[in-house]
Length: 286
Image (cartoon, rainbow, N blue to C red; front, side):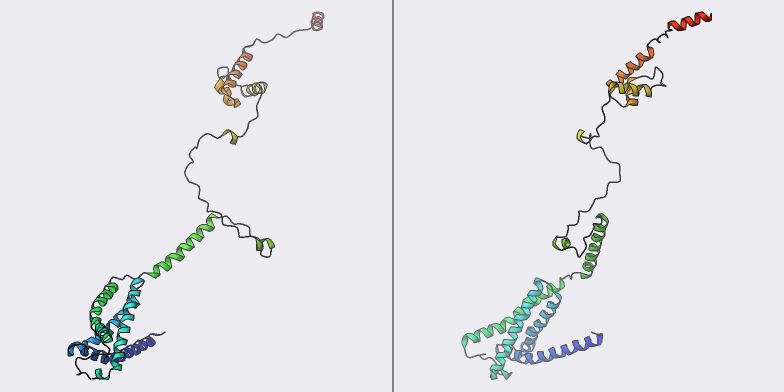
């Protein structure tokens, strides 16, 4: 709706409400004079009743929750009270004369007492309810819906982006496959946490079940590998620890191999035997 149309609508509403207040003002003024109000109080009495109705209507548009319900109850109560007093004014022709003075509103005494109690309690109720409504309106803090609307989509988008980064793509079943129609959709896997960037701390020795089994070597195989690894070593370099590291064996095997290699190196060289035929050939040559 354009601005001009809104202005015209509000202006028409104000005119209608003003005319309705003028009609109700006449009846409420006569009722106030009947229950004992003077001329000035009778002139102000309609503002007490219908004015609080307008205040409750504005509070209803501003407040929310329980406060708004309270404003609606006040608006409904004072609307019903004003309607009842206007109805009584229409039923009793004697009330139309402003100078009629004190008189009974209706002939039935209990009904007359109830109407007098209603007419005289409305000003007191206006003070109480009007003050409460003004205090609620002044202390009301409207909720910023703009920030909530901006926060919710951004949070949803962030969660969707994190889900796309953390979950690997899953193969999809063709649409026209009968299995895809009967089976329930698979739940999404939980997000994978990124691995820590720092060095990983040792968590303890690896259990024997998780260790890679090594083939068991015999003593001859160990000695052969030790000979090949220490062929160019000096005698001083032949230590159990060095041999253990070179052959990748235990300390006991390293000491055993050390003793065996040292024994082989310190053993005397066997003499070369010359057979009888060779010695005969040598003598004939001489």
